[in-house]
Image (cartoon, rainbow, N blue to C red):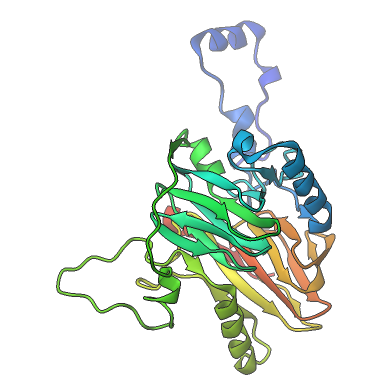
Length: 345
C-alpha cells in the first residue's frame, strides 16, 4: 500500500466544485485518517479527575440548581482530547459524577443507553429499577440496563454521590439515543436480588421446565462481597494479578452488551503492567493510593479519583498502599463486533 496518497489540493478547482455540487468527496485524501496503518490514532487522551476537586463543585451545584430543574444533577467528566463539554471520557464511554441530597428524588425515566452507578460517598441513597429497590452503599455497582425504568431517592442525612458510566456515546453516534419519563415507581416489598436469589456465587434459583430467567437477573453487586472475593483470591494468586470480572450470575456473560466491568486489587508496592488492548478504559478508585503511567503521562491517584486510558495505551499501575479499583471498558462491544485485540508489550 502506498505511503504517499494524493491530496485534495492537487485536484483542479473546477473538479472539486463539481464534486461538492454532486455531494461526493474523494476517499484517497482521507484514507489515512480513517484507515491508519498498524493501529488506531485515537483522539482520546488520558484524563484524571480528582474527587477532591469535584466534590466542592457538586455540592455547590446542589446549592445552585434544585434537582427539579436538573432531573439528574451531574457533572460530566470530559475527555481532554475532545475538550471540556465533551459528553464522553473515551470514544465509547460517558462518565458523570451525580449528586443527590437528603429528601430529594430524581424522577423515573428510561433510555436506550445502558448505565451503571458506582457509589462514591454517602448512605441512604437508593435506585429503583423496574420496581426493585436497590440500596446504594459505597463501592456498590448498580445496573440500569437499556430500556429499564429507574428513579433515585435519598432517605439519609448526608449528600450521596455516585459515578455514572453509560454507553451513551455509542448510542448517540448511531442516532439511537432518547429517553422517556414516567412517575416514580411502586417498590416491591422485599430485598433486592443480590440479597435473595443471588446471595452466593454458583447458586441460582431453581427453575421449572421452560421457565425463562430475566435478561438482567441481578441489578446490584455489593462492594463488600466483591472485596471479600478479591481478598480471598489474593491469598492464592501469588504474583498473578488479582482481578475479577462482574458477570451475569445466570449466564456467566458480561453484565451489559457494550460495557464491561472488572474489579482490581493492588497489593502495597505491587506494579501491574497489562498487555496493550483495543479496549478503552476508565478506572475508578474505590480505596487506596498510587500512581499510573499512561502512554508516558503519570497520574497520581487516591481514593474516589477517576482516570482514563485510550485504546492500545501502555499502562503501568503502582500501588503506594493497598488499593481497589474498578475498570470500566468496552471489550464486550468489541468482541461482539469481532475486533477485540490484545498485544504483548
